[in-house]
Length: 404
Image 1 (tube, rainbow, N blue to C red):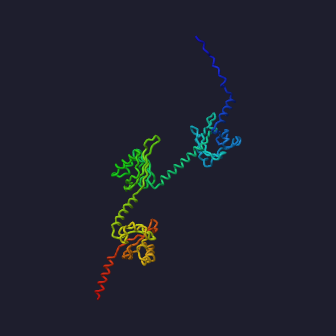
Image 2 (image 1 turned 180 degrees about the vertical axis):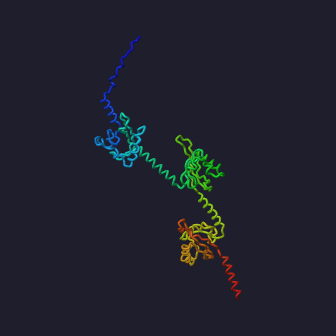
Image 3 (image 1 turned 135 degrees about the horizontal axis):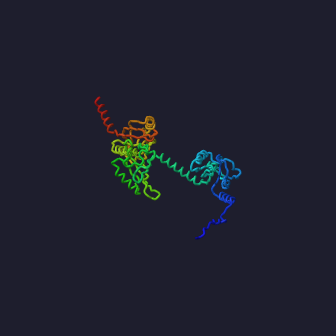
């Protein structure tokens, strides 16, 4: 049998450290840290500060020891710092704090990881904090936050629909303008199918096809369709879509900007009706600026004045070009003041054709105002009453001869 070796292996004395050497090594590690290291008592008074901390705050170690750290913290961050440090007293006995502090270079942001120190009886007796300058990171975060808040405010105040649909056409988000227009809050319809919720049944298939084109990347700008409000009312919307992609380039849906053109469409339809009426009327119709410059005329008015077409009237002065001097004076002194005061004037005027012939006309002059009731134009509906006047003169002639 082999003899048992009861001798313990000898320790390699090269790796043995005395307590003094260990303490020196510890200090070397601490003092060469780029991070800030501090130790404070439960009242927040410094028990230890690293040289890095002293350099950043331009303080001597003796200036800081025994002093409270809180006066160095920005006044707006002191309450949040004190609140965050309460986590030290609960498992896992750590707290992360972000705060501003006054350094030799002015206010800087620091991120601190604080850890509780226990005695032999498991009582917390101090706090060790390891801090790092996070000013650049914090400034970038704040810049992104400001940008996000700006965009959020822009979205919520924009007087257009801003809509996000996922790749299946489900509602992800829309802005407050859409909420006001539709009568739905986002919370009510978030996650629901856009087409069955907002698109009239008669248009659903067509608009779904447009959506599929949009998510495939095809431009669908200027598409017009109706949406249904909560009350069942239709609004006509002109859409401008943009395909969305995730970080990996996969389809993530669309961002759609919608312009409510309901009123515009009504105005355009009414304008078509008006133009149809104006162009087929046997009465002259037009309007001019307050100084008499013609901006619109129908063909009948052009024929009354003896012009070849209505375009040739545009830009001419209706008063000086088509009324004799005595009527010009009457318009200036009597009729215009009346229109500007009362908003309307009706009466007879002798019109001077471009050929030099005078014709009697019945005029209905009235003001066109803007939304602020400011006078913009004077419009005129003109009737050639030459035949009426001839008939009237004929009756007067018969009546005169019957007397004798």
